[in-house]
Amino acid sequence: MYMSIYPINVGSVVLWGFVASVVVTIIMQASQGFGITRMSLPFMLGTIFSANRDRCQIIGFFVHLLVGWFLSFIYAAAFESWQWATWWLGMAIGLVHGAFALTMVIPVLPHIHPRMASEHEGPTVTRMLEPPGFLALNYGQRTPIVAVVAHLSFGAILGSFYRVISG
Image (cartoon, rainbow, N blue to C red):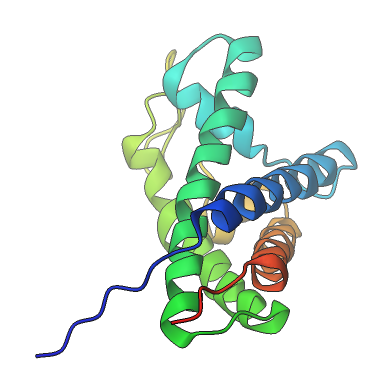
């Protein structure tokens, strides 16, 4: 069986993964600020680690940034395996990434988040965050659209600027 390990352009992933993660966070936070969605990923992620509302925003931002960097390596591995990267290829991966986040990751949060109520059990003294619901629709009808646009942007940035290592 032939198995190949593709080298990844780490410098490109670190730089453009950071930029893409920041852009996703800006899109999501601006959408919340403009009332398009009620979902705040930094708040949602930060409250996993802290009950302090001020501290959780900062923690959540860095957690989201680190998750974005990690996912950038997965995008880079795909680009390297195909030996090319384009904005539209990045957007295609971003579409799958966004769909996966909305249908698989977000619905699991109430089961692992120490401060989030579930669909089956309402809020308690410690579980005060509203559960996201199917496609995060509990945070607004436009939330899935915002999430998909943010992930399409993430993929477009990585696909546009990531440099494949010739091999």
